[in-house]
Image (tube, rainbow, N blue to C red):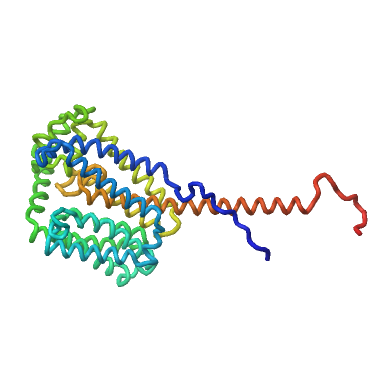
Length: 408
């Protein structure tokens, strides 16, 4: 056999292959978020630090850090999470951090700064489960290889978070686990069993340890039973902001709910600020942007090189959009009050950095799939060129030997 000849990849930008639609959606959400954060935070920023720009500038610093992490993860081969046991190290480190925070406190660990390890846990649980489920393959359909180990890891991470103050983060982690398990081939029976177990444990925890969570649920049911009564004061104030906003809002920066009504306008309640200042139209645009993020993310997941890439992208994009829609549902009274931030919008460094980290991984999976597709195209093109060259060498164009002529 002759030596195989391959076309070399075009060095001009091949390593910078980017899914433009997905990146455009993320950029739109970031710009939207920065504008709304500045509008929602200037008053409380002034009251806390005598500087209207303090919270906004702090968010910009977290944005720069998050973009740096995203760029690093974009260029990293996502298979390294499995090959180098990085997923195991990540989940082990997260569990250790959750234990430390439980007994010591986050401010003691991070030098007085409030860092949310539950945000990191959401990212690492997706990475770990994607690697673990891909490695197990069809074995996850067996209870002792699939359901039991999954219940242990979800119970450990989710339980450590729920014991603290972030029950909504624990619910998010269980939802992510169920989704990835189903996508990897887990049976519906196993999922139902795990769902019943987790709901029973959650109900017990709420009844015994979290009276404030029980009160939130009770307030929610009060509003469900009587449409003229809204149990939660926070939701009542949120509704007031939405009604004041009408169709097109009172104008960016001109809202008053953030000044006198909403308790945390720059974090959990920022969607109510959007509703007041940009109205129904602005709120709908934000909802559509999250839907587009999910749509494009699932396209990337479908085009991934392998099952690991598919699980990673699907889990990460579902997590981001799930958090967004839970926050929005709470603000319009469809769910009990929770602590889920609004991704790209709510003030908070931990959430922004881990969200951008997820974006970096998603774009990295898309990059590797597109590079492989282009490589295959070049190979196909090279094979066609080689065959045409052989055809030209085998005959002289315009000349044919007369029939019967002897060959000497």
